[in-house]
Length: 290
Ligand SMILES: C[S@@+](CC[C@H](N)C(=O)[O-])C[C@H]1O[C@@H](n2cnc3c(N)ncnc32)[C@H](O)[C@@H]1O
Image (cartoon, rainbow, N blue to C red; front, side, top):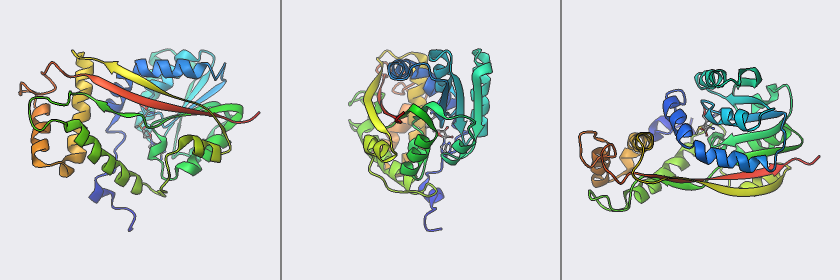
């Protein structure tokens, strides 16, 4: 009991409800993922089975199917509605015959895979698992000899606005980062079986019995003037922050955030000319010995 105050902490995430946001976010980030997958392709050649652990709606799973033409891709997630979207997307794009889904809790559900993976990708999903060290060990155990684990974790918080936006106190996004980090800590604490862990990913991959190979960060740089899609993404992200972080912001910043999200306001992200999307995500790879 003592460990589960996630209602009080506002840290429970309804993943199915997040579907549209996850999907449009991954679509907007496609150029970043394409570069990350091309980079992975230099290390991983002709994988037979790719597992996307914590796939969500499968935008990235389908990019794997596109980039690794011969591979079978299995999208794994605890949210069945998200996996339905992943399956529908794979069918729509013509990958249906080499695309599978597996519903259940990571990491245990990986035991249900029929074959070991040549590439196991976990994109921004590992940090949603209570015991990340145990999860990485389970990932490693599901690899074929010579197989690769690639995790996308960390990087830099996304920026949508300049420091001074002409309303409120300058530096709003930096202050949002601070409260977001605190929320993230509470979110992790509230996970079932939560274990505090130093986020030294190569060290954790080593502890899982793998040999870390490469680390690289990928940039998404969509400068102003933003496309409608980029603008919508900035609005959706700030709107989610208002929902989740509102109590932790001071009144002045709350007012600024409200103005930024009010479509009728000239100064809102829906109308202002200086909106952009700038983000960096880091990928860590490690291999299992032959
Ligand atoms: C931030 S989303 C990332 C989705 C996708 N990989 C991407 O980058 O767009 C995290 C995903 O992990 C899934 N997830 C969270 N906890 C999980 C668990 N215990 N077992 C399986 N999947 C989980 C969620 O359902 C969600 O789809």
